Image (cartoon, rainbow, N blue to C red; front, top):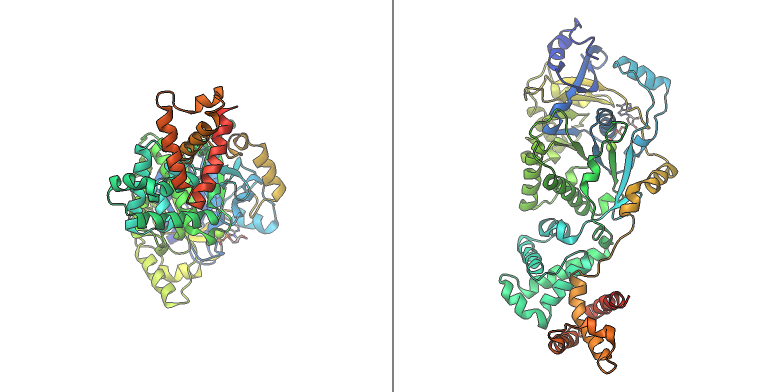
Length: 519
Ligand SMILES: Nc1ncnc2c1ncn2[C@@H]1O[C@H](COP(=O)(O)OP(=O)(O)O)[C@@H](O)[C@H]1O
Ligand SMILES: [Mg+2]
């Protein structure tokens, strides 16, 4: 693969090519261009061992970002590295289908030294909470945590710390927060007359704030968010699979209507990344990453991010490297990415940027300023005139230094460019063992809403069963203090029953608990 490296007589190739000769395995990005019409025989690549130093793929719409992501994902898989990518527009779903050859494509690939052959790759399709096509990914409220939930609920700092107290209270009280109903039940309890003592005991949580959070939660549920929370909780190590044929699994998370609720999706992606971080052992700098995570539409992650959330992102990106996970951000402009994160991205693939507005021009200038010195006289000019599927590349070499800036014509993906047909996706999803494992939502019977509701139903059971001395009913009341528990529950039930929502909730969980007791 390195056959022609450094043989060119072109002065640009002579200056740039030696910077792309590596000892270890590398991904082939494409051919080096001397100018808009001259393709040299030098090859531009990224050392696989440096992919945990993260990367950026940027450029205006339609300039080739997704295809770049696709061809990187293909080569990672081939090299036994699993890939996760958020597939915002379904563009990547074609990875499971072999590409379509054409004369035009052949001309392009031959020129950049690619021995193109149509190939399909091992893909699993996922969907948040089963909204869309894919194996549903769900998470419990407890695991998701107060910080991320605050972000999706768009809480302010005070409300965020209050929500933290609510989580703390639930934990101390042994109230499991599985789905949103559980969290609502806890908040309803704390804002009820009965929960007043608990609320006061928490200190720092006002019932007004608890009420605001409760309203936000209800609105969140109304948007359909219930589907994302619950069990069976997704195990992010499903992404780390190397298939029996030695190829890395490509996990695609379909995110339909992302623009409607950017915070929800970006926050879920952060949760997945954080979850991986907590699960994986330290590996330092391995020969190749254990996973490469592609964050498409990355600006959604930073738009309106709180200080805490931003810190979470920055920390996760900084620390996950030593766990062998590489993260690539994909966005229109590098200026979309917060500078604390941008500074940590070792590889940069910059597609065309436009400078139509003063803001664009500013972003372009800022972008150019972040590059090392280059052999191109006017890098800003080059970035504006890049063709589709061309990019300005600089990567981190094996010594950790940036490679020379290289105007690169990229290779072409070997799988289908564009969305797979629906039947193919359905076939993969329904045939996946993961679908059997995660397909159905499981509602546990001992979570917070059930426990809080149980007091209500215990009272009912006691009241109904007492005259009949029903044997099974005895099981439902605590043997040591049947009277007081029932009294307490009845008292609480009366108070709670004044609240319509609680009533409905209590009825539901009460029924469920009864069903369970007598089965
Ligand atoms: N590396 C490439 N090889 C072949 N065609 C490409 C390549 N990159 C981009 N293209 C062409 O440009 C179109 C737009 O690319 P795409 O990656 O979808 O852009 P973006 O994600 O930046 O909006 C593709 O549909 C394809 O026809
Ligand atoms: Mg795209």
